Every structure is written in C-alpha cells, then in structure tokens.
Length: 60
Image 1 (cartoon, rainbow, N blue to C red):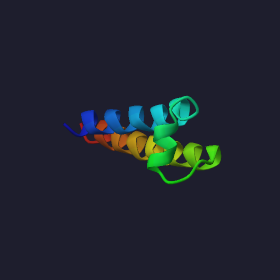
Image 2 (image 1 turned 60 degrees about the vertical axis):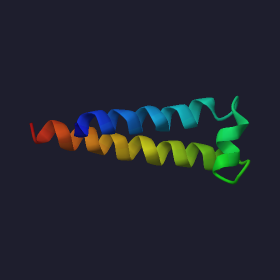
Image 3 (image 1 turned 60 degrees about the horizontal axis):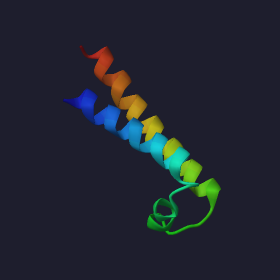
C-alpha cells in the first residue's frame, strides 16, 4: 500500500514539473505564476515520493 502512495506522489510531482507550463491552473493552485516555484514544488513532491518508495523497498 505504501508503495502505491509513493508512486502516486512521484507521478504527481512529475506532472506538476512537466505540465505546469501548459496547464496554468496548476500554477494558480499554488498561488504563484513563477516557473521556479512550480519546479520546486514538483521536485519536493518527487523527492518525498521517491523516499517513500525507497523506504518501502528497504522494509520488504
């Protein structure tokens, strides 16, 4: 179950980072029109999801 959550967070982080330029609603949701902020939020979510996946793999 934890692996699915980690995978979902990783995919969400990637979508925010990649699709934020073409989907302005994502940037408006975070309250900023800055691409740098979009990359930071996407990166943070990606790192959190990757950490969950690594933690899940270690505890198998």
